Length: 286
Image (cartoon, rainbow, N blue to C red; front, side, top):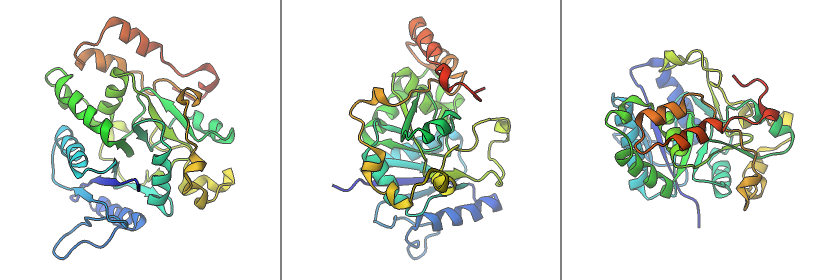
């Protein structure tokens, strides 16, 4: 059975450079042309649904709408990908192979942890983190998406959904429910930092770009794009415990959970704080 992917793209059409980068992304993803009278494409190259979320809305509104839309499509996975992303050739073939082998239901395509460089040279195809979702691009399995939306609606204190950005909220969900976030090595996307950020407050973020990517690093790793299209390349880890776990990416996530998540206990907080990067992978980590 073919893995189906619903693709949601948040877009800020009032920013000219974002309009141009969206055009580039649409070309890179090889979407079908939009139907007559439409501005944006509505189908991928293999017929799955695509939606561009272009109306002005607070983060907690458009993210909720995007996640609910992904669930309503019935697709196996929701891909959220931002307009300032570049992708590898044959992106969807590579992504399907990757998702068919994904060891969990949350896949953060922005693999930002510096240790991914070491792991790539060691031949690892995955690493995990406790909370390392970055909004540039991520995929969530349909079942997981349903759990996450229910958790968002029922497990946050009043104001929590509004106070936490959408990618950080997924990280809080993963930490609070003891799920791991999985990161592919190499990842299939890159982040164009030449385009002005929609979040200038993140200017000092050390993790703004994935560290090992198919768009730019395959020659160093001796990998061909065709290999990325084979599920066997990504492996099917029946024992996710064998995947290197890098702990929390963000220092603040446990405190956010303590502030906003109902039922967050002292023992859970201590466990989350202790889930730090192992010493052998701590170099270059702030």
